[in-house]
Image 1 (cartoon, rainbow, N blue to C red):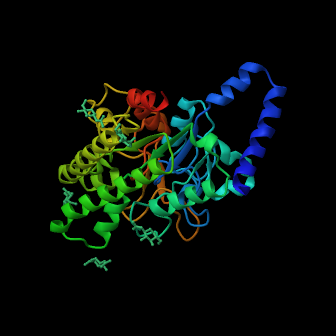
Image 2: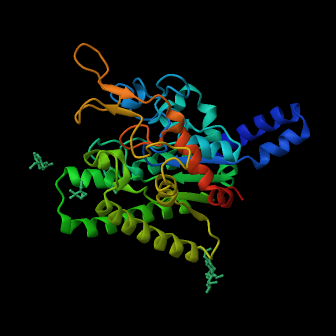
Image 3: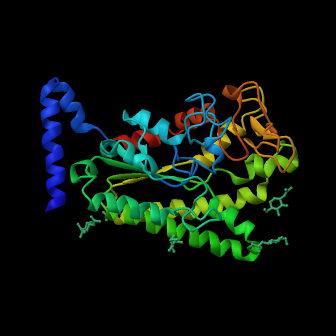
Length: 344
Ligand SMILES: *[C@@H]1O[C@H](CO)[C@@H](O)[C@H](O)[C@H]1NC(C)=O
Ligand SMILES: *[C@@H]1O[C@H](CO)[C@@H](O)[C@H](O)[C@H]1NC(C)=O
Ligand SMILES: *[C@@H]1O[C@H](CO)[C@@H](O)[C@H](O)[C@H]1NC(C)=O
Ligand SMILES: *[C@@H]1O[C@H](CO)[C@@H](O)[C@H](O)[C@H]1NC(C)=O
Ligand SMILES: *[C@@H]1O[C@H](CO)[C@@H](O)[C@H](O)[C@H]1NC(C)=O
């Protein structure tokens, strides 16, 4: 009852506010989408702890907003481009919600860099815990039914479960069962979001892991590791089957849409050099001096131990795993039919 009261009160306040505006504005407000985001660094816009994250250090954010701001790129990431397409503001990171609590009604970003469906090495909120936070906001009435009815979720899973598996020295034979377990857990998470009343969900396929600079560095950024890409394809195949089944069970309402990062990355990366926008496309813009240095790292005297390319605009990868803002723009334009299906 109390929760409903808070929601109703907010509604009345909004009504008064919108009555003060023009009619068409109120109408627009009615149709406004509300975006909730779950997952990892491909979608995080500032949740990763500021004291430890490279995303809050130079040179992250040099293109947008011009200084480090918690995004794992030189600028905007997937979340920002999706929000722009939907015509809503990029949702406030969950960590920063107390700064302006009312912004939560426009959506919340729960994604945290380095996380997966299972607990990874950084031990921050896995996707289950992120959805727990979302559920709490629903129960507390911070997010209302009215918001939920217009809700869209973005779910990003770019592979941290697998890097954790490798770093924990998981066996080659164990990988296939592990991939099955990851996709099963991801599917449970999607079903949970559906059960909580989210209307439409976009879930990413995994980008070609073997083409990330972290994998291609040993090959001088000249070719992808096809063994790793094959494992990625297996993950994606299982995911696509799961999504098909979930949509069937939901009476073919197709309320889950796939954002195919695998093919969108590949379409750019496999464009012959010189024919596309991106130059030397496997080489990251921001790269450590040595294999142990990373983008953003400094030595004891505070000097940067990384180089930055002259033009992030024509470079696909920002650092060892993340695309540049310019690459995200290209990816989202490739994803346009899926983005439109999500927005419809
Ligand atoms: C997610 O993290 C919580 C808290 O650490 C843990 O209890 C839970 O088992 C994790 N979920 C999965 C699916 O690994
Ligand atoms: C994995 O193996 C390496 C090399 O054998 C070892 O140094 C490291 O401690 C192992 N890591 C774990 C989590 O067992
Ligand atoms: C490709 O990836 C596999 C699996 O991680 C690894 O064993 C292999 O050494 C890699 N190949 C190259 C050329 O790096
Ligand atoms: C799908 O339709 C069937 C038959 O009309 C109905 O019994 C079932 O509850 C529906 N399922 C969902 C998820 O809406
Ligand atoms: C979903 O569509 C398929 C193919 O058109 C059809 O065979 C199936 O009965 C539909 N499922 C439901 C639950 O409506």
